[in-house]
Image (cartoon, rainbow, N blue to C red):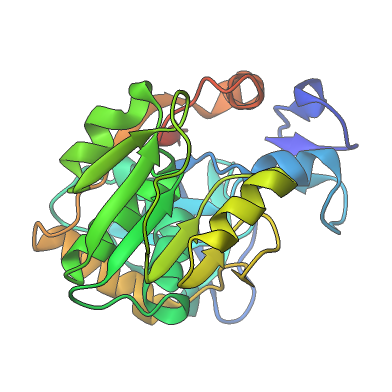
Length: 272
């Protein structure tokens, strides 16, 4: 699924291309599934420097010679993709392989927000703003695993899932303002206007943002050690992978339309 120019969802097209040939140090992954991430919208619109034509999607779950693997890669929205072998880790054994496509980008972003930047530990009071998204699901569970008390903002559509992930308190952001009180860490996982950014800063504590540049703003890096740690927590039953929808990769343009209309919750898996 490629784009040849920037624009709306209609620029996404289903191309037939030759089977990729691995370079030295690479392997050929037969893709079982990839997943949608909000950053894909920015790629399609031309907000990031890329060479066109460009194959969308950055999560992969698939097999290499029959061995199930996952990883954060480039150009995963295809039947096959070549990947540096060092970028892959064994897939979780306890969930369907296609579901594991939800893990790499969202899971690594949550891990790095919780542990690398906010440095959440037991007993801390934490606010997770936008807990109903794909990153939020992992962030709530990782913060709870660290022993924190978690207050989460979520819409009614996402509240049940956020509660199931272990949030101690849930605030409906569609009807209520940000909660009052003091937090030792605030994770912002959604776009906020300047007034909302000021309100987050006013809560105090360490502010970490994966969207707008406030507080500690970061873009998640690929880290196979952390990805392996996530897989271990999933196989141990500590972290659950919440799949909101499973759709066909060939319907990627419709997924982008639904995302822009605010109709997606959690992680949407795209099967080949």
